[in-house]
Image (cartoon, rainbow, N blue to C red):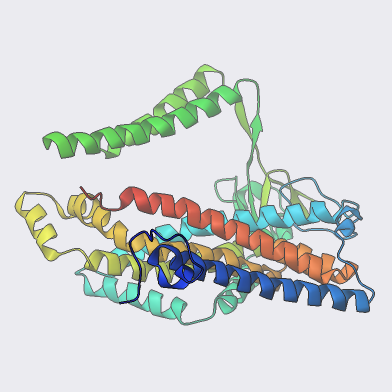
Length: 404
């Protein structure tokens, strides 16, 4: 062969860039990088020339101008005189909120449906199969519109709660379900509430630490500690004790009917609920199939061996099957989280003010800055997608098999 792999005593020659395996890979990568740079340079120069010919220039100064429109639900202070950048931040937070809630609910629904679909009970397994097939094969936009229509038509208007005792129509006197959304009590933080919050966080950490210790003890010695009631006790008792010792520093602002709408408390708007539920149920159907595939990928010998040791079915699933199935479930689960986050851009169909509705919708139409708005939208979705992938890949590495 003409390939040179040993050092040439005669010095470096240009021909070695292709004939020597020590340099060939670097040469090809350099050529590919130059070609890619040339393509992007050509496209960028072409865009610049076309914008100049049209009398346009790329500028982000419009972000400091007044937005001039209202937003139905905002997690930060906002009004029509706020800047376009403030409106964009409202949309970003709303997008992150529905993506976070949707990923949690979709995971819970998907795991439950995936496990129950393998149930030996024929009715349960068929019901889960019907759920998966029904939601997976219908576009998510249709489910968003269906759930939104059900909420706005089936639920009563806030005025229906008017009466001598309006609390009697509210669930437990605390929650109101209306066609405008759900009204729930809001916390009132008094002196000492921070201590209660710190105690609650410490209790959560303590619960996970106990469960990790119990798992390690089981693997090291075979001794099985109870997990249910100790975890619940560690999670609730310290916080409840501190709450009463400090004299109940956290109160509740209960929603009350004032005029034609409720005042006080927290309103979870109908658009948010419709989008949240539709994305969760739709994505949960795909996650259920991932969970089913992961469980079926575990050898039956594992479950038979665990049963021979006297483990109950629930513990076999929690301690033997699911930990091994996670290695198959996590990679496609990352894709489902990314799909859910990007599908949240359909929020504009029900009037939910996400980043696509604010920056990519109203702001774009009012300012005419299409290129700038689309670039910002692309950067946001790229950043959030890369962040989700990075976090989930770290978790995937933690559950992967450790080779010797």
